[in-house]
Amino acid sequence: MTTSRKLIYSTKIPVRWGDMDAYGHVNNTVYFRFCEQARVEWSEKIGYPVRTDAGEGIVIINAACTFLIPIFYPATVVLDMYAGEPGRSSVMTWYEMRVEGDSRLFAEGSSKMIWMSHGTGKSVAMPDALRVHFEA
Image (cartoon, rainbow, N blue to C red; front, top):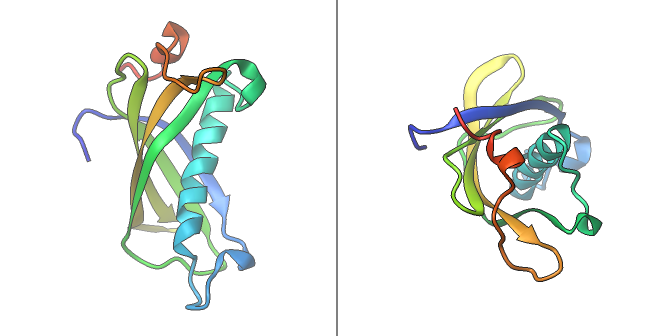
């Protein structure tokens, strides 16, 4: 992870029974859902609802996750979301996932978020009102 990052959001997400796979632990695809949930909660909390009729909004163009320790049901994931320095239309984000009551790092991820016009499907300059949420 980069040294130039800022904690922008923390959330707790309960693990559901159906999140587990045939191996008995949380399926790898669910970790991406955990990150997605944090991004959506953060975006809506700062006043940017996730809707295509808004004209512009945040989308991701890549996502990665490193699975360090399996998570099992029942559990509550504590997810911290960090952001780097924003560019014209994009910003890198990182995620750390722990299990409530356990300080170990269970997974870490990243994604690049782009501010996009829903009409054109192309990146556009990030609004200054959004940019301030990434500044230290």
